[in-house]
Image 1 (cartoon, helix red, strand yellow):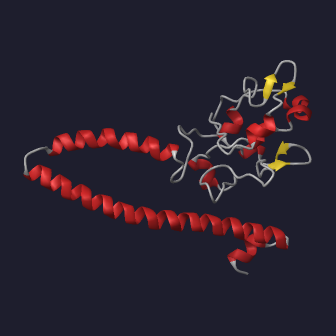
Image 2: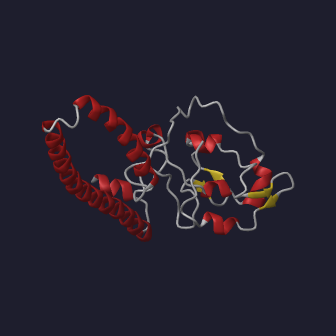
Image 3: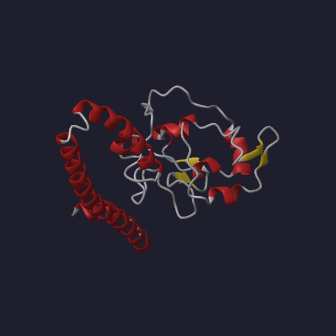
Length: 211
């Protein structure tokens, strides 16, 4: 049996098609990025090296000055790179989730009938530990954000029980998240009042949650 057959064994025809579409979408994303980035990189590198050589020959800059400015510009570009959603996103900073001790204790069972596990609709980047472990699924089209179903909920949510199916292996943001002061979910946490615009807020793809 091939590795592909092993992965799709037990899936319905529709589930296989959805899996194939997600994998294909992820591959197309990677290929487009790789091709576009390679071409731009070569073009920029050519201009940069040419400019540096000319400026150095004319005595207008030194290598020491160039190295100092390069670090400043690199930090600025990295911030823009991350904000634009380019490349693969990871948690920053990262923690070992199995030794993470800043967990939040909330009586979720009594709140679930009200919030409908709204926290499981939040988007956040996984850690390298999550990705390499291979238990927490990530979005192929948006590496490495936690994977969501078509209804907007986390892939690992048990829809019938409104509980996490990988609770012991859940990511750090799931362990650290505190909904009590999150106005996207509660307009009044103490009195159990849900934000009336919660669905509209969570339909936005820009909702990111960090620990």
